[in-house]
Image (cartoon, rainbow, N blue to C red; front, side, top):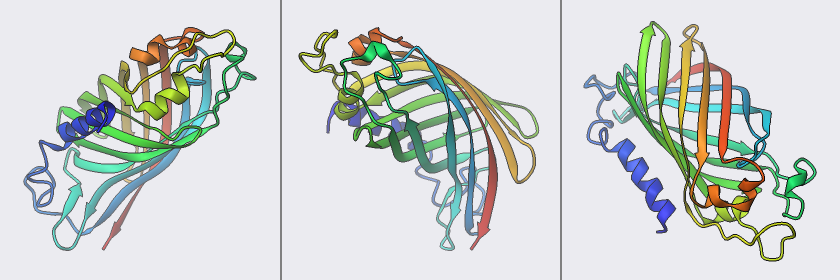
Length: 260
């Protein structure tokens, strides 16, 4: 198992560790299992982020929301559904736009990178004042590597239905991802040869909010800053853009419940 996969596994174990003994028998707070069924959220919104990782240009694009909140089976097995969150597992999606010299002339000489869709899983545990979370995704299209993020948030709820959070983040990627976005092949005109390796690729901080407007609808927003580090920060690709990465996101979602 390479270094980045060890990092991802450790992050997931950190998230799952506090709740594994109890999550199959209760809601994470000692209460009996709820009515068998599934609760999930679907929605979408707008995301303002660098055109590509390492870019200094901000691009506005759509983003999807697909989130599993609770799964309770008739045999008593349950994931999620705690009064203030508990343990949950949900799909994790990300879309990375194409990277071309047509859009960014400073990249002339580098190979274009097609749009990539990343699909994976996120695990999280939320208590009254704290949330731990980690995700891991596999790329399709522009890259075929693995990447993900882990973080810890302080959580406050100043009024009914409103949640505010903020905390540090760290992201990681394997050789396939790093090679696609940060390596420079020998002989590339205008760029020094560079071989990017797997490892931690950024650190930063995020802050956000969620407001449950009604039983069926909610809105959420987030703003964050990431600093590219390691080979991602040292790459000649980043040198023509910026190591400082800012992003803002806002979305609307619909909540669904289906009883078994």
